[in-house]
Length: 110
Image 1 (cartoon, rainbow, N blue to C red):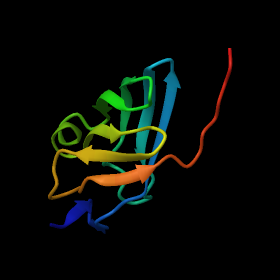
Image 2 (image 1 turned 90 degrees about the vertical axis):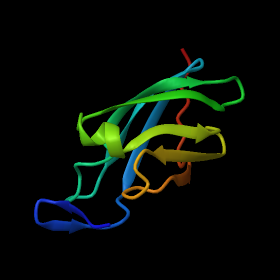
Image 3 (image 1 turned 30 degrees about the vertical axis):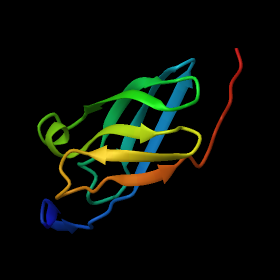
Image 4 (image 1 turned 180 degrees about the vertical axis):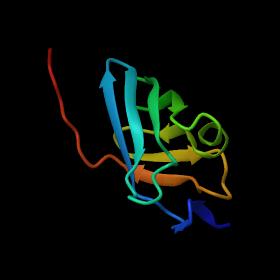
């Protein structure tokens, strides 16, 4: 399956940046495709919740592309915020599920 943006043939994998903010058990954040020429996909705001051990209970993605984003892009995160997570995508012919780990943690106390 070939993915195009305009006349440009996009790579099978694009660089993704995920930012999550956790307050108590609620999470919010975003997913952003940082590829310069194929940046129409995998862009959304994220909300949801985790349990006390850091396991994802629920995630909701609100895609910038209202038509194709809902049909093809990421729709949830599974796993644990402190270990391995999986980004699940609706259309596996375009985007395969991808495992990842957090690379940076910032802690804030109020």
